[in-house]
Image (cartoon, rainbow, N blue to C red; front, side, top):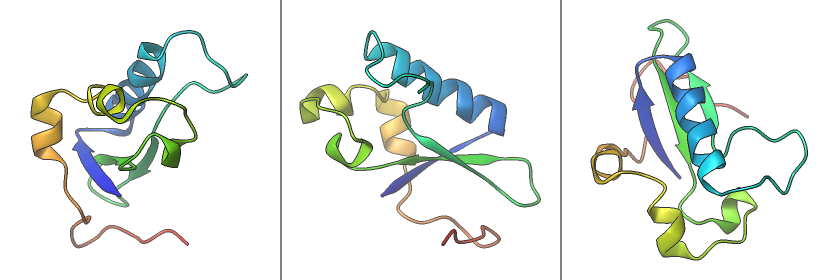
Length: 90
């Protein structure tokens, strides 16, 4: 699992929705975002939760196409762990 820190929940949700839209017509009714969003409990920033493989997202997509959903800058900014202050979800 990797995380992409975004400036706000709204920004993270919009980025996740853009990745979902890039996949084409939705297969899952009601789905609007590809990746889940974890808000920071106090700072206002949010993290996209980016699984390492498309199958971990429940989509059937070749790995290179999945990787291409992130820009090179976003891939470089991915972190493996959230820093201090993030609350672990059960």
